[in-house]
Image 1 (cartoon, rainbow, N blue to C red):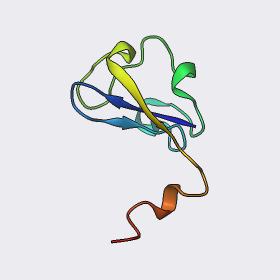
Image 2 (cartoon, rainbow, N blue to C red):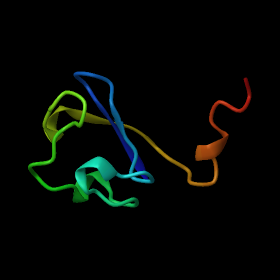
Image 3 (tube, rainbow, N blue to C red):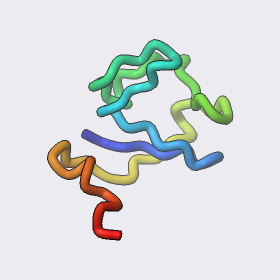
Length: 67
């Protein structure tokens, strides 16, 4: 799954979690978000997001565990 980050405020959209506050189900890819979806933090449009990486579902929960 691809993670996207808002270039304006840094919000990360992770399809594994979706955007439940805006009725976006878990597992919804960024490409499948409605065209009128906006960043829940700053209101930026989808065009203001940039792909940052491909997430590996098996390792998502391990991020930060090396600290």
